[in-house]
Amino acid sequence: MKKFKKKYLDLRLIMIVCIIFALRTVGLFMVPPILSMYGIFIQNSNKLLIGACIGIYSFSQVIFQIPFSYLSDKFSREKVIIFGLILFFIGSIIAASTMSIWGIFIGRMLQGSGAISSALITLLLETVKKDNRLAAIVCVGITFSCTFVISIILAPIIVNFVGLNNLFWIMAILTIISIAIVIKFIKPMYVKDVTNNTSISIINLFRLLKNVFLLELLLNTFSISYLLTSNFFIYPEYLILMKITKENYWMFYSTIIFIACITGVPIIYHIRNYSNIRKFYLLCISFLLLSCIGLLVINNPKIFLINIQIFIFIYVVMSALLPTAINEKSPKCYKGSFMSIYNTSQFLGTFVSSLINGWLLNKYSLDSTIYMNIIIIIFCIIFNIITNFRHKIINK
Picture 1 (cartoon, helix red, strand yellow):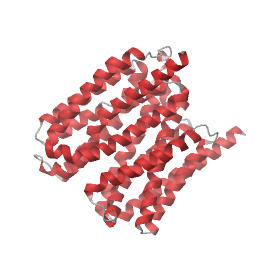
Picture 2 (spheres, rainbow, N blue to C red; picture 1 turned 60 degrees about the horizontal axis):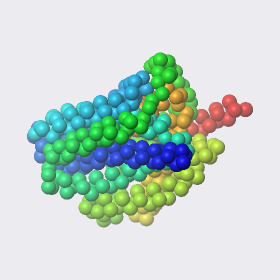
Picture 3 (spheres, helix red, strand yellow; picture 1 turned 90 degrees about the vertical axis):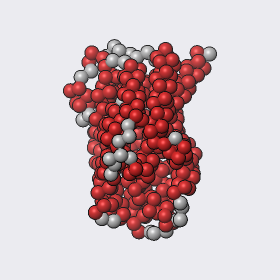
Picture 4 (tube, rainbow, N blue to C red; picture 1 turned 120 degrees about the vertical axis):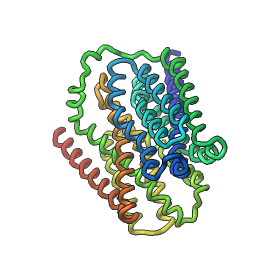
């Protein structure tokens, strides 16, 4: 009976965290496509400022992820989460109330400064039983995928019926609902162990970052995020060749994501207890290299379909395994901080990829972005091989 009750509480917390993530991200996923299509009509707008409005959210996340999670390790996770949601709410209000592109820029910057993803995931992972942690991460990942697809479907409807400003008002309302959920459901069921908080310091945190396996995981995280962003620069060109219209993008991506989730979840559960998980990471990254080379060598729509399915499948699998591995390898009193470094690696990969790919497409051709992806992957493979070799020597 006690075991059943704990399982029920774990499932309840997983559902609550997934709902908070969904409420917070559904609006965020709508903003980039809407801004890219309609941002030029906003007062004082130009293409550079539109790009800045899209990218400033990730930049703010990169800056504030670690400070927020450090505070959540030092004090209370739920209070930090509520404070971050309040910042997100203020940013949404500012963006909703303005008629200028600069107001949207400031609002998006404030939204990004409420960097609670790491604190929320850490709270989830340290509260549920160890056996349920991977399932929790998979559920969060599936929530992101579903929210992404829903956002693509709803984005044109929202902008046609209510406009961009009202989208930010909707985001503000959803944020209030999220705060209410945290206060009502998370605070009563979450008790943080504060016995080791006195030992927490930034100096010790950076000393712990010398752990080579953690660095390997963070590099893999950065690379996967870089490639995901880069591929969304590349894929539209191939979709045009396949005569898939923009109105049908949501159907194409939702099908690919659905297949990746259905095939990926069994692999995740099978591989989670694999003794040499590093070899599996290396295998995944090697397949990514082959898929990039395939885009350059074989200009065929069927090969492109296989290519994108392989990439999304690997992204789904590694997005579930990497945060779980980082949580398990990080010291107890630094779990929030290490999860923030993981999320920072993600947002940094997205931000750097946006800058580099935008510059490459402006100066050179589409192939140059694929070549850069190959360089990133090769570096990642070399680092993984070196750390694997070093691990074998230490074990001997």
